[in-house]
Length: 245
Image (tube, rainbow, N blue to C red):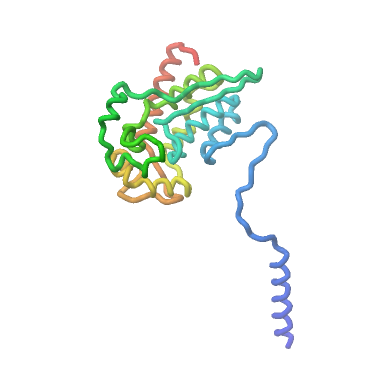
């Protein structure tokens, strides 16, 4: 009888304890502070911006660092080969615009696209109602501009920042050495396999050993890292010769 009573009391105690606990709902709460804020599309880009703040940089330094890190880690929406329209509002309230959209290659003329026959991997879906048909591809290399992000980052840092390029780009370089991708990037890879498979360099990076990366898998981008490190080397060599930031 005593044993049964002890078991019953223990069960009641556990039940009551369980009822007092709040529901276990995993959520990502917003981060708050009193000295500044950075909003980006991933924690990697946000952290890159905060690194600039913590090291004494201004808001422009933080924004450029976040953008460069995003160009490495948010490949579903942005990349180093893409565009970067930038607005900078100074403390005096004046707004400056850096286009950052790049230019079309010299041979990418209107006649070239009019005479170009679209390949299956240059089309993402049916044409939009009233849109252009059989003209400019929407996938592959042909619709790409001359990359605008690197130049936009350099101009914005030069005119409004306080940090060197090698400082602002370091978080992005760190990411090229490897980071775990999230669910959104994994989904983007799954839906883009047929486009990635066409380009050997892209296959090596985004489909290692022929496998589609899943959330949590490590993505490494050594070629991109080598390019960014070469830019850093050029800047540091210029600074050693007495050039200014």
